[in-house]
Amino acid sequence: MKRLFSRVARLLAVTLLAGCGGSALDACTEGDGHFREGDIDASIDCYTRAIRLDPDLARAYYQRGLAHQYRRNAEKAVADFTQVIRLEPDNSDAYVHLSKALEMQDDLDSSIKRCSEAIALDPQNVKPYVQRGSVYIDMGELDKAVDDLTMAIRLAPTCVDAYHLRARAYGEMGKPDQADADSATAKQLSSAGM
Image (cartoon, rainbow, N blue to C red):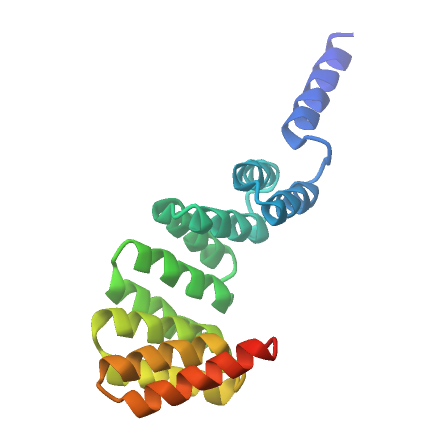
């Protein structure tokens, strides 16, 4: 009887920890729903529950990192994306989001390094070029920014963010014609729903 009570107590504890869904993936899915609805705190709770159920579930750390990033909690986002990279070292998007969190902490050199690592992992991924270009603008390294954003545009000619950022870089470089051309392209792409 004592053994049965112990098993029931463990089962009850796991069920309470897991909420409605019993698996870590269920908790992640629930968290995704909360995130889409704008209930960021509830999404963080669900992703944390998923991590308790499966500490090796990279998706839970990734999603929780996004939620922390949305909340502008850079320190927690850095911790979560670092954990994703530990679990999935080839996840180039995790490096990009880690870069964004480091940028929020004004650690621009580390942010650049993470983007470079993402590019080395997946040179066809547009996101690290756009992110690194943005950081280069923050650093005042405008030629490097233009180079990265031009590469992003080559890889994805409809990437509105790349045109907006390159327009900004050209503007800061005193090149109004190029800035105006990129702004016009970005506006056209945005109007077309790209």
